[in-house]
Amino acid sequence: MEGIRKAAEAYFENQSDRKKKKARKTFNAMDKNGDGKISLREYTDHLTRKKATNFTHQNIFGALDKDGNGNLDFEEAIVLFYLMQSGRALICKSCKTFLAGAYFSCSQCFFNDSVSTYEICCDCYGGKKFRHNDGHIFCDHYTLLRQSRSAIQAAPIRKREKVLQFLKKGLLVASISAGVAECISNGDDDDDSSKFNCSIM
Image (cartoon, rainbow, N blue to C red; front, top):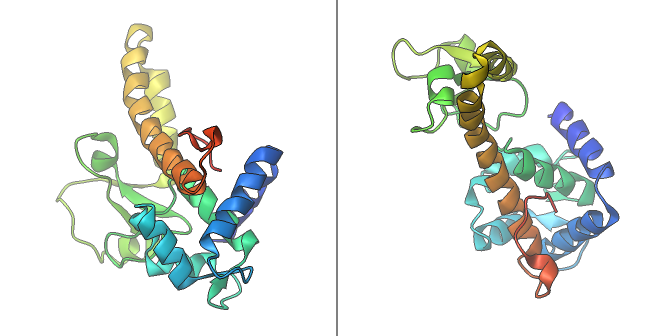
């Protein structure tokens, strides 16, 4: 989780002042009682109201709560915004824990756009504590990223466009996640700045 936390902090620092203000506004909207922190109930209520229930898993809130005090301060909430932007709010299909570090994906599910992906934690993969289609090959997430790049480079010039179109479908999913983050952060606005776009805040 520490790697995700550092990435979130770096990502936030490189946002515009306008987006940083939106992040603070989103935090304040979630903090219904105005005590400067977001309780589990405030967190769940806000995300449920915004139809982002895939982020309400107890393990995600627990991972965000770095100091373990049962609430999220602003710095901890920044990690939530990053998870929504990056699409990293993944839960192990076997043990149902939040995948905060390295994880394995079924490569057939990953490259087949007709089914959802199948991710499992290292413990479940290493201990063979999962049930999935026989013969499917699992790769860690870094390997899948490298395979995606290799597929583009290996394709003949005239076929690269087809490969790129396939990979762009995966990027569209990331854009949808970013749109969810934008809708959540803008959901309480009434001005033109609340229009949908693919930014984190």
